[in-house]
Image (tube, rainbow, N blue to C red; front, side, top):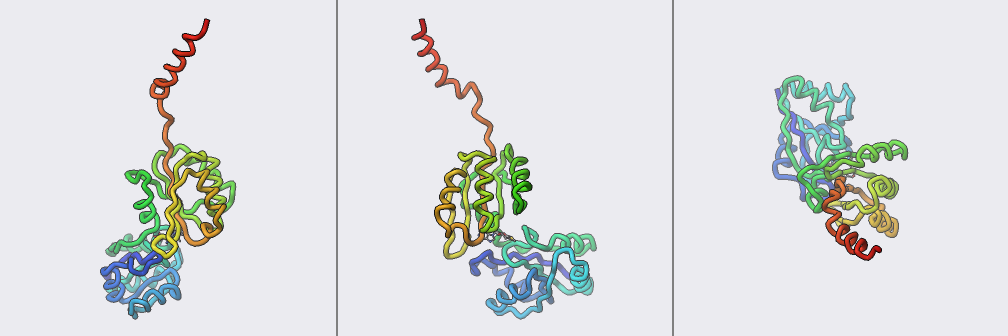
Length: 249
Ligand code: SAM
């Protein structure tokens, strides 16, 4: 059987595609793409003429076609519109099916917006939780955020530009205005922004500049921190209390 390569493509800057990714995209017999029109522009840019076929997530006819090709011995590459396939992008069902058939799946790593944002945000990166897109409706979004209120890992969210402000407002409400956060916008592109502010200030900053409500963005939010223990807090407070008590009759 052939090999299914899961190939990361750029999230904006075309220089971010790896030499290995370019070689694999040239060598495979077929490229499975989220959107063939979008991907044909990328391939054209790099002078790659491998045939493209659409791979809609959870479409058994599409998936069957790639499985057949692999079983016949042909190598296939899976790509999405941007970044790493399967990361808030199609491909999960195909990869699962191909693995279940005993066929080798090989990752060709590269750009991924959440990892790019995390690597430059300056928030704890030793443990993090990727939450993907929040629910579009207010009630669902609030419920998801409430469930994350006391999550101590750094939180990462993808967000659509037209929902950024609403999501930030809800985060400031639920997590508190003081919670540190970083907005990563248009990463790797001309107008790349990485703005770090407490959530309350970030809401005001985005609101004041409509440019910040355009383009693609990742939100990195510091995890919940238990309030400092009473003993630690009290060292100073106790001294003041002693002073006040001394003044009492
Ligand atoms: N598979 C992609 C990856 O590896 O990051 C993610 C695909 S998902 C459909 C698209 C979302 O990723 C956008 O709405 C945005 O939240 C984030 N994203 C993609 N490119 C980005 C960029 N250049 N800057 C900031 N966020 C980006």
